[in-house]
Picture 1 (cartoon, helix red, strand yellow):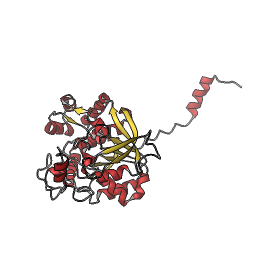
Picture 2: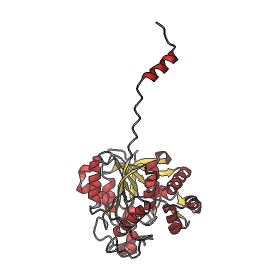
Picture 3: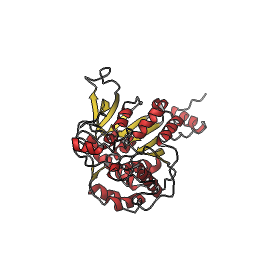
Picture 4: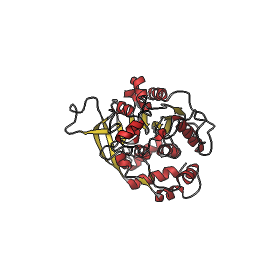
Length: 356
């Protein structure tokens, strides 16, 4: 019997073998964006980062009061998705005020006793009667698409149960919708893949009081409920890292260069190159590329919901002295992001803003 050389035998085997099945494309990661949406604010940019290139399956955008009233956020989300041709993504109105009643009524007293908050979001103006009746029309007019009639907490619970273990929940506004979802549907808690928050200020000052960051200050009770919920995984992007990443004229020029697109037009009309921060956009960036994180720590996290000068303050207990079972009762472990690779972040940011 003639024996073929090894190389020739391998070639013959390959030639006679049936063609290999094409590798199935990996499923798109599934997310729900829970946001206090504005017009090209950090929530909108976070949304655009996830819609770009259609690499993420966005199950819906749920709206919560915070930066804006829920009616305003609903109108802005609908219009901005329409402008980029993503009417397929449902917009779902949610909590119209913080969980505990009287938050607005008590604000005057808080300002007098503990110092005036420089920014109070929705509380800066009256609540509109409807998402179609704002004090000022949304950028380029009202959307033709309509929101779902389902409430945000119900939508979150339904989508998580339909996609067990697959849904990452972006809590980039006050956590009211998240708190309502887990309180009314506790069965979803072990089914959520991850919660990514923009909230808190741990080793840095707050931006609305000396101790508190805006999102968790707006509804401290909901933030406390959410971070104490035993989700599989919680990741927090706090003020500590957000204030290290300013958006400047240099980044603006990179975004708006070249042929016009709907997002570039928004930047030209609404941003005009002024310096700001990109808070919520960091959550989308680290979701798309975890290697952007340069420094993070695991801590047991809590929120001060006791009325006083620290109302809304985030608390992070180090894993040494306060590791379980010595962690404060009821607190849960979370990963807190403290620094990112800024150059690579801006490359990703610019790429996403320019490509839709």
